[in-house]
Image (cartoon, rainbow, N blue to C red; front, side, top):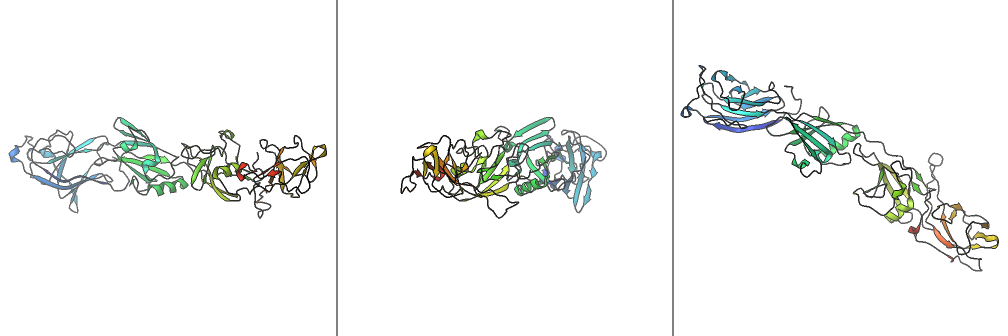
Length: 452
């Protein structure tokens, strides 16, 4: 049998095995009567002639395929559980440092190995053991949406265990065959040369570190008194690079598209406007904007409304590509910006001869919009100007312009989003002493400077 190159695994077959002459029932670690003598006689010895034998600490060394027994023993193999050991077949076990070693490397993996042991060559009674050397196999797939699994079961999506001709598939969440129903211990190791470890011991750290190295996870099943299964190799998917998230300060948008998600203060959101736990949130990211190949972006005004951001607040988002069944979430990129400033103070907008509008301000960093749905903003004209569709009592929206960020040419210039807007009502003519009260400042969350 091919030798397993893994960490030394020792399973106790029996601590103290004591038996008198009686029929052997064929159970694991069962006992049978040895008969006959050195002359080759195979007549079963009478029960009253039996002697008692005690063999301490019989162990199975699965790594080196030995049965290890304290002291000096004699042994022989038998084909079936109900076979009687033959007196002429007893052989001395190899002995080293007071321990006897019985080799089982040549036993077929699918065989139930039955052997008998006695402590002295002159004894009439031996002990029989039944050892299951049936090696199964395991298949496993990972749950790539699971980020910080504490143990191997948490990281897996499915496990298939095959023993003999029977295959049982365990699926996470399956009430009948879920992972908690596995009668085997799951063992794992990092790479071909790693050490086998059970379930949760250090798995969380190992798993996370292996993602960065695109390593291979080895998985097997184990059960006391049985050989471990053949190994399953799961090559971890490569973690993709962080996405490039463009911030357009003039339009007031962030390029968080379909297939991405972002984290704000510890909560992950999908670009479709849902939290990572599937609970719908306020429509800060309009679902209709996104498709599988979405090219639309999220308006900063939607984030202001969703997170109730104060004017000028410092915001830090971690943005990444979402995980799928076949790949991990990407590394994340950090996007930082300031929330839009408060809306400017209202001033007078009057309409005069020829339906020309006059903006009573000398501010050159203001811009206006007459249709928020169209979201088209223009610089405030320096002189009286006719604006299509605007008459007395029309609403005009005004805000402070954004500042474009250009890290290549002007890295010292900070990008700034347009401010919130103020809504101003157009009056027929400017009256003496008008303080601009014809327009009222809208609340900061009544709109923003985003544009498409």
